[in-house]
Length: 279
Image 1 (cartoon, rainbow, N blue to C red):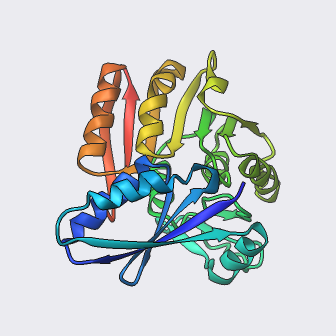
Image 2: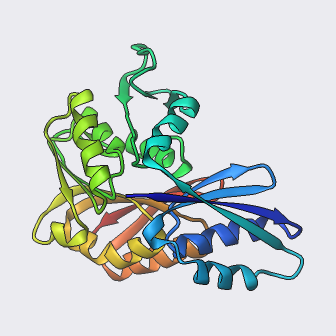
């Protein structure tokens, strides 16, 4: 799958105008954002990029907030070079060390994850992935059955394995991501992770103790009913890929209507990871 990078240059307005714009871009299918001087870059699968919808969104920005954009096609053979040049190891909550294959090991940390993202997103650098990992490090996974929905590189599934999860299903609708997980799980001694290409229809009739879903608000709202059905009583749902405020309120209301009690959330740069409990 090819990805497009759209670089937005913002002038005027308030800081929160840009935050709202990013939220609206998430509704259009953009799933990864990166701060840039004078604006930000956003990434989307090229086949999902709707320039007419993007133009309509930008035309309706508040008075005084001006936004220009430039679209760059990311070629698969160049993407690996880009992340290899910029991907630095990170540490999550002083417990989990995430590195690429060409970085040295760091045995002083309890958990180490080695990731080769290829064209898949999910290295722990984005706020949502980092938040999900921080939340997971406070959870008990021993012997649990886990779903990683929208798994990307498989980083969350791999962490679940290292935390003791017994059965793990990692699902993504992009075959590149599924291939990436297959490679990364071997690198991390997590061969028991099962991968599948598709969406929420693949979990019908299955039951999980923990569901991890780091996607975006619209897809989460669309799929939360299936998550609720697939969670065992007292099962835990972790979700990220959305913002504080209206996004979180919508997901709280949706969860409550399905018997999912909101427990808590953590925020970073307005991004949120939230925890729900099935009653």
